Amino acid sequence: MPLRSPGPARVPRDPVHHPLFARYYARISVGAETRMGMGGVRDRLLAGLSGRVIEIGAGNGLNFAHYPGTVSEVVAIEPERRLRQLAVEAALRSGVPVDVAPGAAEALPVKSEAFDAAVVSLVLCSVRDVPRALAEIRRVLRPGGEVRFFEHGRGGGRAMRLTQRALDRTVWPPLNGGCHLARDPIGALRGAGFELGPYRRMFMPENGPRLPTSYCVLGTARRPPPEDR
Image 1 (cartoon, rainbow, N blue to C red):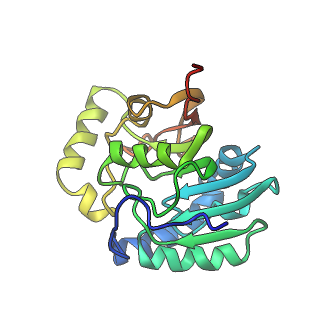
Image 2: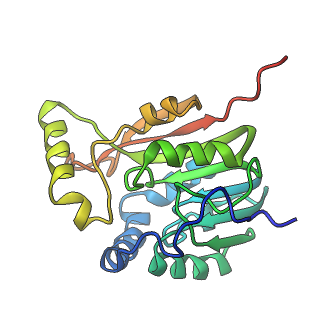
């Protein structure tokens, strides 16, 4: 049975268009796999997953090589055309079946309650409407389904947080594909009704200067099952 459907709302085929940023991101993200230890983070992010998984904002598909063999299928949603093309190439090299599709996080083109888990990796910083995107993730997960997340957001002392907010109001989003530095992924997940599981705050890079992008969190959450009646 196909998992994808028209969904609750129609979106343009390419709801995000950042061709220059896409080329830049594709280049630096590959280097970060070893230089910043992102490969190890992806292993921890995806370890133990099984069943059908939806990945939101798959980028150039660097997660695909890290999915365990217990995953039966990945539906990878990526709105940016250049990154989606690279993700299709990465899917061909993956050890698990991966279907790459266009779409926006705020209107996922898949059926409700079709997935056992959802993955968001450096995504919530750049979606246009975080509550709506998380509501969509909740919609497509089965009751009790798991969210795996690795996100960056606000952190540090007062001076760093002021810097993050100032950059968000000025140059950072237009130069970095809509990315924001001062969002709170943990608060957003709680606000969307997810139950937080274990998570840990960490720095990227782990050893080095503290940058506005350094404050990260890696963890799990789940869609609560329906209350017993």
